Every structure is written in structure tokens, then in C-alpha cells.
Length: 352
Image (cartoon, rainbow, N blue to C red; front, side, top):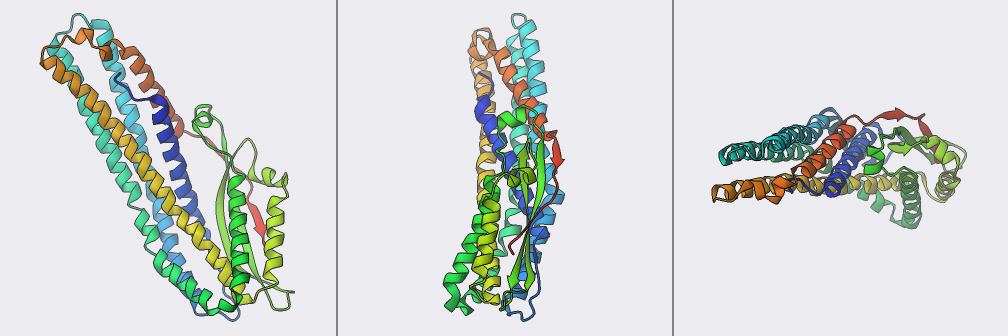
């Protein structure tokens, strides 16, 4: 049949949508992540602050530019879907009167458009994945800066590990409470609620009586049907995590608290590599799909040129089914492009 497996293609598109959404959320997060100044600041903190500015710039570049490339990938389905619908209608009406030459001309036009779709998808994917290095290039120096602070406080390693793990658990808990956005959600036209979640981490002074603002991390939470505020209001898990972090801080020095909080950022930042890996994988899957569809058309052209009767081709006999598949994919990509978002109230979480 002159069409791909509809479920596989939808899954690839949905995964791409989610990974691009993830990189966008990450980009907003790194732009809004702030590292404050401590009264007595160790040398490694200014270095980390400078490196985070580089990440912030990368995030800004992504937000400004990604949408054009993503739209190019999606609109390829609209372009080919329209061409295939016209071809299907022509074959349906005139299959027994069209000459072999005319059918080959129609098929050749489809083959050319499939080649354009593959090229367009590759160009869009290359543009999207080219941003990865802007994010990851700073990781080695950022990691080195944080590790230098960690090493200076080796006698408090157990306390720092406990705090860092608790902060990471909080971030994981926030992620787990978000709604899954799958193809059925998108096809159903559901409205997604986007919420800025701000985690403010303060350093407890030696007396434990004063909390000095140090680190502010912003993440985006996506939910369906409820705001993220409503969801966390129905669970004690987030509050339990915040209390645990506060209790652990009381056992560590001010600098150790700062090192632990900053270290916890690294694991969060490295998630971008996983997202780009998935983006490449499923984007490449779409490119292969376009090339495979082109191969089907080219094989039919070669067979007709070799003397085969096109009116007996199964692929041509099933044109109406293939057309329904392409029409469904066209509509699905339009739903992705026109997805409706609402914005929930900002959620502020404080560790103490």
C-alpha cells in the first residue's frame, strides 16, 4: 500500500512533539534558573554562575528558532497528503482510461514530492539537533566547577549526597505528577495546561534561624483537565520532599548546602542529552518513512516501464485506503500545530 503504518507514524510524531516540548521546557528553565550570592562565597560559585549564563543563551536561541524547523517537518504531511488525495481521485475516476505513460507521470510527481518531504524533514531535523551542542558544550566546565567545590568539602560528602538526592527526588516527583501526552490526547483535541513551577532553595545559616536565598529553578509542568496547582494540592508527596530537604540542610554547612543544591542541577541538565537522542532517533524514523514511501512509488514506476499492467497493482487497487491513512496523518499533524494550551497559576515551592 502506498502509505506507511499509521500508528507507527503517529507514535513517531507524538514522541517528537514531546521531546521538542521537553527541550522547550528545559530552555525556559535554564533561562530562569538563578544562582544567588552568598555572604562568604567560595571561588567555584561565580564560575558556575557564568556557565549557567551560557546555558541561558542556548535556551533563548532554541525558543526563538525551533518552531520554524518543527513546522517544516509537520507541514510535509500537509503537502504530500494534498498531492496524494489528488492522485487518488484521478486514479479512481480514470484508472481504466489513463495510459501507462500518464500513470507514470502521476507516480513520478508523487515520487518527487516524497523526495522533497524527505529532504525537508532532514533539513528540519538537522536544524533542531544542531542546538544540542549549544547546550552541552558547557557541561564539562560546569561539572568541573561544581566538582571543585564538592572536593573542597569532602568531609561533608555524605550530607551533600543526601541533600542532592532529596532535591533530585523532588524534581522527579514533579515530573511524575504531570499528565502523559499521547496520540489519543492530541487526536481528542484535549486542552493542555502549562504551569511554571518555581523551586526556591535557600541556605540555612549556621544558627538555623536565617534562610539565605541561593538557587531558583524553574520547570514547566504539563497537565490535562487540572492545573498543576490542583494536582499537588491533592498530595502530600511534594510537601514531604520539601520538609526532608529542610531537615537535611540543618546537618550541613552553608557551603555544603550550596554545593549539594548546585550538584543536583547537573543531573537535571544532563537530561537534555537523552531528549536530543530520542529526537534524533524518531526524526530519523520519519526520514526513513518518507524514503520507504518513495521506494514503493519508484518500484511501481519501474514495473510499469518493464511492461506490468498498472490496473492490476495491489497498491493502486488500495489507493482509497492509502488516501485515508494520509488524510488521517495530515489531520493529526494539523492538530499538533494547532494544539490548544492554557496557562495555570505559577506554583512556588520553597525548601525551607
